[in-house]
Image 1 (cartoon, rainbow over the protein chains, first blue to last red):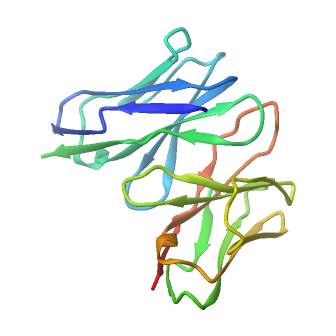
Image 2 (tube, rainbow over the protein chains, first blue to last red):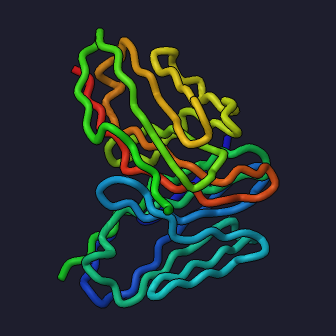
Image 3 (tube, each protein chain N blue to C red):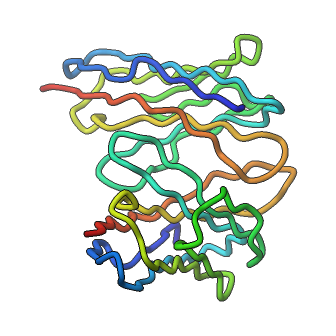
Length: 111
Length: 115
């Protein structure tokens, strides 16, 4: 059975800190890994990483895929209170449309 | 327009009621999804429609009945639900291609409470 594990499950930091969120996966035929940010309601898309795009960056957020270690990290530098959210990692296989989500990391950034 | 809309935002229904959740997108996406999300848990896939045809049903009880009347609309018909069905129901859409992964865009969800 496909499995996506995120760590830590929750994290509390102060504004300005740098955080690293982890995601490891076990899927039969990996195609891509996606990161989402979920605040009150809908998850919003952050990054998608594939074999041909293993590193992505947008502003203070960046993500790297390690296909050897079957894992990914999401880095957030100079955190702000608006970064407080649940960060979800999801993996897609080569066949079908299914995304397998991890449990998420609850990030709280205190002023 | 990268928006997926869902109505209603909140719904309270009794176990004998029949209600429907609605989802709409105008991004030209041909894949649409229903997810169920319980508190502090990740979204769980329920159904996937691809080109208006049901392609995935994750063994969802028959009291949930999806419908895709056209490429922009997705409905979820609810009947005889149980209190444990109370959750946030998320709709998502994406481009559809079995060879390429496209990100899914999520709607704001419907918060359903079954009494």
